[in-house]
Amino acid sequence: MTKIDQLESKDHSDAAALIGASHVFRRKGFAAATTREIAAAAGMLPGSLHYRYASKEQLLLALMERGIARATTSLRDAISKTNDPIERLRAGVRSHLRLLLDEDEAIYVLLYEGRGLSGDARAEMVRLRDQYDAIWDGVLYAAAGTGRLRPDVDLRLLRLLLLGAVNWTAQWFSPNGTYSADEVADSYADIVLNGVLAEKGR
Amino acid sequence: MTKIDQLESKDHSDAAALIGASHVFRRKGFAAATTREIAAAAGMLPGSLHYRYASKEQLLLALMERGIARATTSLRDAISKTNDPIERLRAGVRSHLRLLLDEDEAIYVLLYEGRGLSGDARAEMVRLRDQYDAIWDGVLYAAAGTGRLRPDVDLRLLRLLLLGAVNWTAQWFSPNGTYSADEVADSYADIVLNGVLAEKGR
DNA sequence: GTCTATACTCTGATAGAC
DNA sequence: GTCTATCAGAGTATAGAC
Image 1 (cartoon, each protein chain N blue to C red):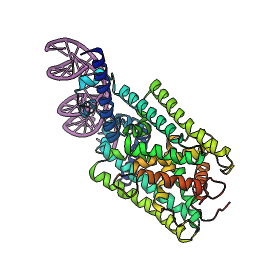
Image 2: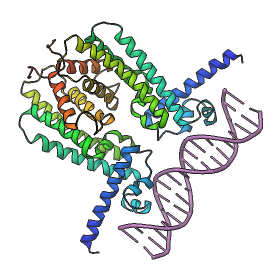
Image 3: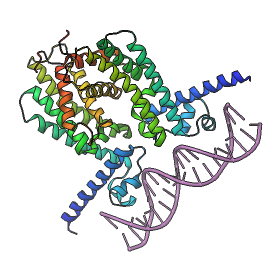
Image 4: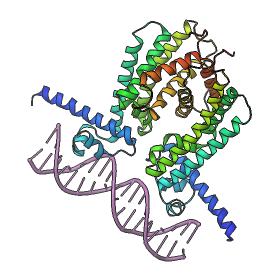
């Protein structure tokens, strides 16, 4: 093997380990997942998995870092398609939900298995998640700046409500169910923007 | 000991086991919790804990059943205080959030540790959760029946959005933070009812 | 780089004295 | 009913051959 081949093989096997881990972590949770199972899902043996990632926790950290990088890229990409902050909000919800429900099991793990990390790794993960939230706060702040939002709405609570509902969909959503990920996203955005009351009661 | 004393002692020690378990499950998750730790938190030794509950999973099931019974009682109680379906919705959100954030760690465990149960126990838990959701659907259906909700709103998605956001608060809420549980509840209800847009854009 | 084989720890659960 | 002592199995991680 040349150095290039080795590098490509390394990248490929690293990715296989991460994908295998994301399957197992998603299905059983971090604590209940075994390294033997992860290795099997990645098509390798436990010793080889350990060669790639020194511990189960480091595997989780790498998986989360990859997940948050993808989520950030996807969100930035989605909101760059329009300049209207309200439309950016809708596009952001679609981006987030599509990734969580259809595309990337690492996002679920990132959202629900944070407890698996300890110490510095935990702090690093929180820092990355805060960066993602900061993009959202930028969108919401811009929306408020247009004067089109009620001035009494707390933007942080608005983000927590919206993303909380979105994150929770992973608990009940089924790809064979009534709605697609995009339909859920659009309905959620619509309710939060317009409310459900027929008449405004303020 | 008389029979009555034994019974009271049994109930008391059973409750101690459940409370200990709820602490440990809440802090570390079901899979990472150890029976030794739970026994210590309950002020007893592993052998005694095992005398009360034959397995870790049975302990989880008992804890969840207790949690859902409390949530159901609390919700019924809250909505019985008014006849206005919109006010019932607000009261229900307060009830749910107060229990989750301030009063009962079993509710968190119920919401987030369902994976710990398998087979029949899992099915039973889902059945009980569906009963709780059915109360909510009754409130929302009644609200729609008054004609005060937009007719195009999907009531199931409305429940999933609202309760999803509410359940997710357990991930970020701090008792020392900016808002109380009731403040979050009222803000969430307000946003979902009225929306955040200053002008209705339909 | 990947494999086999295994060390060592911790876990849930049990048996049986008191 | 509660305790002590312990078992059998599963878990992560390692060592070292290839």
